[in-house]
Length: 229
Length: 246
Ligand SMILES: Nc1ncnc2c1ncn2[C@@H]1O[C@H](COP(=O)(O)OP(=O)(O)O)[C@@H](O)[C@H]1O
Ligand SMILES: [Mg+2]
Image 1 (cartoon, each protein chain N blue to C red):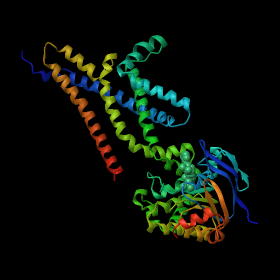
Image 2: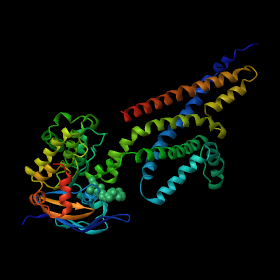
Image 3: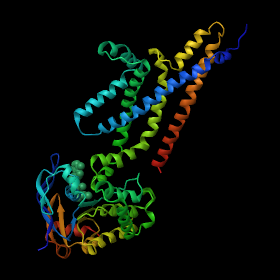
Image 4: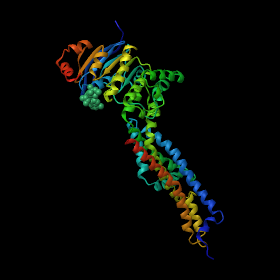
């Protein structure tokens, strides 16, 4: 019997399962981004302080998460931490934790870079009206750094969403893992199903990531136009 | 005798090994206007910035309103509410409206009542003829307007003492007068005590009670304005005045 491959998507609950997987993916990415960005802002601010040991430690943290590939981080936390440190979390929560720490590291660099590019005059005129350090960051430096941070942050978000595709390696039931299961289960009935399943997954990722990266480009272009008059 | 607002004794300042202020001694009386004159690089900015803690100094003492200042960042933070400063660059906060620029100090630092602070800000804005710009952002202002707002922002804290560092130096010529008028008004009507660094010699001559002439980090002359402009004592000061076209 000839089956058109596309029907595999609508066989049984397949489509709903894929959507469910997509939801897991989006949830992990969203939670990782929200908490990672908050963590990154705090760490980024701390990295602008003069305290040397603090800066060295945070710099090492950043370099660690930047140099080690995310897959390796994931395995490290998934296979090694539980054994060595008796630290057990379900795979999806563990993945979220790894992503939060990774986003926090990357974000701290974005925030620090933006903060130190606010002109020195701004700091001095803030001090001159009696602002303390907290107020200086809260009302002057952080608001002014935001326009510099937003495009880079959106780009980071698209990277995070793309990188969720490695979650299947630690058996998180994300959209790719579910897709893989559907392909295997229907291999005989729908030999071309693999194209359709991955085609749909491609479309999911594209629909989420493309608008984000378009938005980041547009904001960056606007900012440069503004900066150059 | 008038009360001394500020007393500086044996102040020394180094940038690394570079000695930029040498044994600075002077005082400023209540209501007095002192202009700080001298060639570029003579240390005027450095000196005036030491007076509100934006620069550290290595030796000497600063006494403000009878209290010897212990130069910690925390103490300076408190003192800066009483010692206002306006800089050469138009340094309004670009992320805040004119009104919010002015209100930041009174409401966040001094925790003044919002409504009262706003009324005061409106009064001050009106006094520099910028009432219409309360809700504008700094980028919508000309340099002269921005500098007038910067002065208002400092005055909103009700300082006892004001420092002005070449506040007209980067303005277009037609904007200069408006800003100088405000400073003159402060001196004449409000009897504000202040130190003014300027290269506008006519303005200095008119506003100053006293002149400090600085060269290579040393105070070479410290005399009444009248004496300085009519009969400078040192050849350096004579050369300086001759070089200024006024
Ligand atoms: N941050 C700094 N580091 C090193 N040297 C400085 C710094 N700021 C100023 N100087 C030097 O200190 C001297 C006095 O400078 P400044 O106070 O700006 O003079 P003025 O305001 O009279 O033009 C100059 O020789 C200048 O090069
Ligand atoms: Mg100067």
